[in-house]
Length: 220
Ligand code: CTP
Image (cartoon, rainbow, N blue to C red; front, side):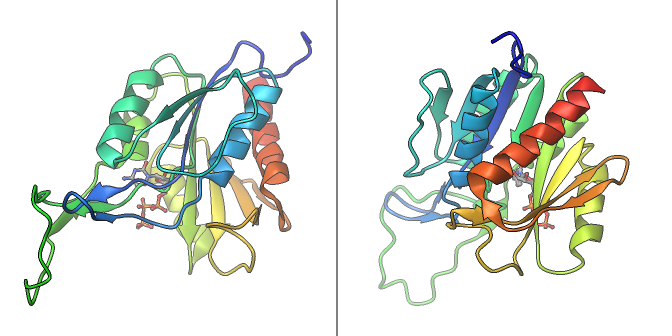
């Protein structure tokens, strides 16, 4: 048991979408299922880590009893929770699909469809990952990028701009990969510009590839 590579490490993982309220019954959201983040949490926990999983709305269930799960709904709530737990974390993996925009104000009454030309004013949500990058002390910080064109270049600039240690590139051009699927196809890019391209795999196996890469960084 003492051989578990993540023993004694605190790993903070985010998963799922965030929902940004428009009115009491509607929201802006996305199709993230939470599967990737939940697999990452299980894998890290099986390798001995002390895991805190912060997730938006999802149907996923945890198998491991030792993972601490905190459910949130909005990007603001996710920001609060993540920032609260950040200082004491050794590794942070931001796999949540945090909404980029939220309504500027939330109507406390249900919007009526008699509103002929309804438009909803939106503003940017807080970029949690950027904030973590700016306030980083000793944590290893891992982010995700979902790109359609200039994938590697865009992912690399995200890695640098957000002060990350690794970035996981999800291509939207790959069939069977990404939102909702049980499989995913990723490339892992490091600060030193090492790029590893993985084939399409079950998200459980993808999570092991990612965690193994993180363990390498810890042991450097
Ligand atoms: N992310 C975050 N907070 C947000 C939006 C995104 O922490 N408000 C994190 C995601 O968890 C992911 C990473 O940022 O790890 C990548 O997000 P993405 O939406 O691909 O990139 P953006 O920086 O939003 O850039 P762009 O929309 O230009 O691609």
